[in-house]
Image (cartoon, rainbow, N blue to C red):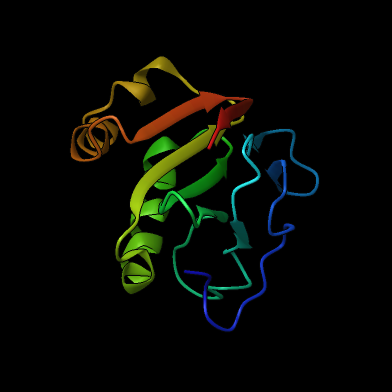
Length: 140
């Protein structure tokens, strides 16, 4: 269900939805092959204006799938914490949706990926967390 009180930043049946912050090279691109009804929101500074929060929310309204997206420099634990905080703040909005987590980092150190703090999120979100450097492109 679209977020009450907020307008989607993409067209209802957009074929491609890009999440990108101005001035940063990393991005998330979603391909909507079947022209499903989608909504896309800028979370940071628009939907949530204070506290920890991720950058974007993308929802496939027909498949009932939501993607929390964080574009980050290199701090994977901080990125995961922001995703988690956003999930908690918008929990009622995700009722009935499968929730996925996306972290697009500018650079990552191997020790950060294997840290126990980050590993906790990988285990908690079993297969629903995808982290890449530079960009993520996927079909939704």
